[in-house]
Image (cartoon, rainbow, N blue to C red; front, side, top):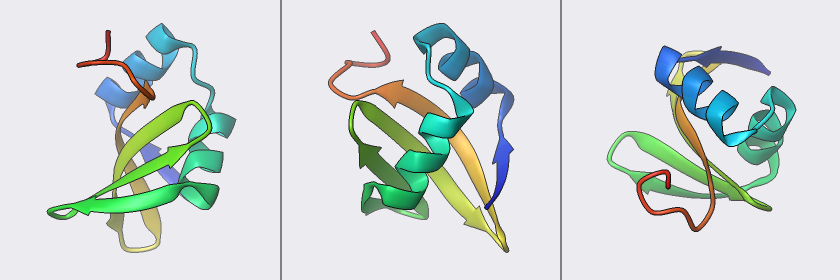
Length: 71
């Protein structure tokens, strides 16, 4: 799996204690829904918003499920 993280996603994951492995697991194993061209994946306690870009997954943000606006 080829993963590209936005600066925002890296900052948010670091602040929220979400590892790259958790993000990958969320994308690979999570329940998915669409929001326009964005994909929202939810797995265990993690929620990841990303886009498909060719053979890569571009991560826009990562958060803990249930948080309102990341808080």
